[in-house]
Image 1 (cartoon, helix red, strand yellow):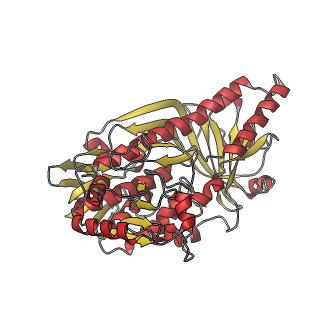
Image 2 (cartoon, one colour):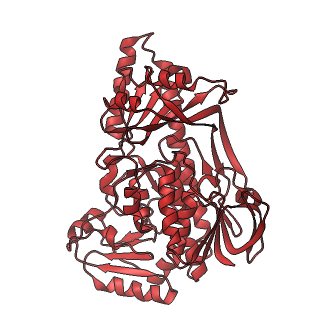
Image 3 (cartoon, one colour):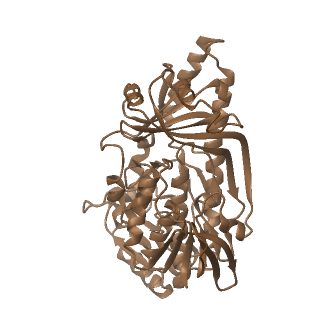
Length: 524
């Protein structure tokens, strides 16, 4: 019997296994694929995700595994009609928010990231992975969970037991279904194709767009849905996804012609993979049922618009991991495990509503209202306005936070959301941005596996009192006491308490009751 059994060893499941394993939790992982599936999805890793990679001790390995040469910018481009139409502007300016995070973003195929995470899991003696097995059934009682697994390519069965189970087993999650967790779906009634193709000639064509690695094409015939290209291997292979007729098969459709249409010219290419998926957004109506939790695509799924999928899943793993460890080690209050759903579910609901679906709605409105064949001057003016808005905004408003969470003390009278603003102020419920300290380090370098308390005015007394309260409650706490005027001014408060996942639990001038503060942020 293990403490936590993770069903699904994709990137989210492996990330959670590392998060738990590094905390000394005994973990089992059930994964049907012996090797990562070489389908180039989940490529854009945000600065926040690379903070997770650093916490899991794989940041350097992830950067070494990339398939694009170092020094190549990771920008995107939006074009109208076709990629070579002449109407295009920069898109996805994630680099603009870099100062607010502790790491640079990165880009590599999901299977490459997955291989790095598998290697890290193999280093953890308290994590056992059952490769080549898949979940068939799950039952739970008040004290344990029992999972029946079957060989993926055989008939053998085995029973695994755990104190908790986490379904990281994708959009058709067996754990979600076995736990009787329902989901709300928004079907867009679109069949989408994913194509991987090899073409050095295409690479030659896109050299006119330096520092770009993905390309979004708006075509009026598609009513706001994208034709989307992305680089997989430098100079060689690419992926393409776009809507296709509902009856499309691998045999009855001209995929090469469709790609040529999206680009705006013909060129030699070799198809390596063709797959299909339905465009929909799904959100589980709860993230927990007793001792069963769900994370990643098992909890939420959506089209690959904007690179939110894998990053959202990693954040699930980081959020849930420390809370499960706290429950297993005896310092979690009754509300801590429930706060996983209270924080993560509304953030994804906002991501879907305020970003992913907004892309579709805004693009649909644009292509319906502005047509260069009907009124060229109107179209060019509207296109220039979109380009300017993209230049000014980027995606800086995507700043997930947990303000209003039941385990956040103080802060705005708000609720968790993906919509926010990046700023250096230490705000309760928000990600802690890095600030330099007098010794040349950054505040981010001092964040530990437990809570971290910064006393930035050099006063030892609040730190000593909080350390004593934490010892009594068995709450892991590290303390940084330093006179750091620049950081104090930037954060706007001299005292900052940071959670194990890097979000501010509380910030202020003085602590009235140290024991009560710790009780609140630990879910008591």
